[in-house]
Length: 181
Length: 79
Image 1 (cartoon, rainbow over the protein chains, first blue to last red):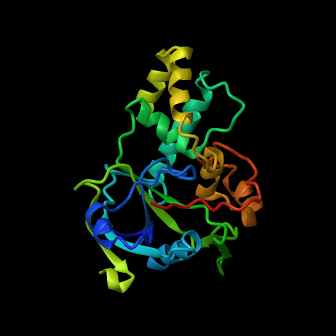
Image 2: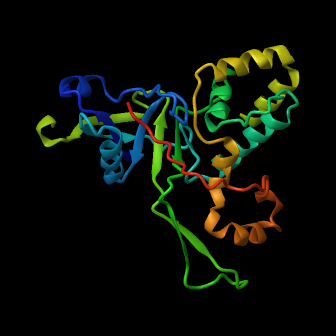
């Protein structure tokens, strides 16, 4: 299981959050599709998001344990096989001859089409969130063939659960602000 | 999943596909394109020229070569 953090607006309703959370995101910028969004492991990402997204009313951060089972979680951040599967799904859609729009296919379109056709095998997805403050650093030593090597640092990781149940989630609780614990 | 997707796309009619695709787009979601997302698996603007060279002899890893647009990718979430 992965420790993950879920940020919500502070509507002075801690009891409801404890009882009904996490809450399903159905905003138009839900870039992985409708689902229950979490930050992976690093609590400050949840606070940063709360500060920028809920400036007026403030925010609440909840913690939970979420699945990292590879049969349940489509891990597009840490599983090369799952990366390849996403690429293959996109290529298959694009080259099928059926998709004839000029419009680019969105990340969420690939996932939602698989869901619509009953082919999506997972209950969650894990991704690097393409954060604009991500850094790339050059490593000190080149590899054996003399090429420079690089490492990404500071990439935020998100988890989106498409279903909340005992397979995907447990121990959901409020951790911030302290008075809501 | 991919084998089933290929079979399904090969056998479904254009009308069926268009109907299903319309259902997908009906949500009106916004976000990065699949190409941009795939690029983020291994290419970053700061070393893209190096990556392109390094990966050119590894066909299994080359599916798409495209430019990452220099815009702010800042998709996150809220309940």
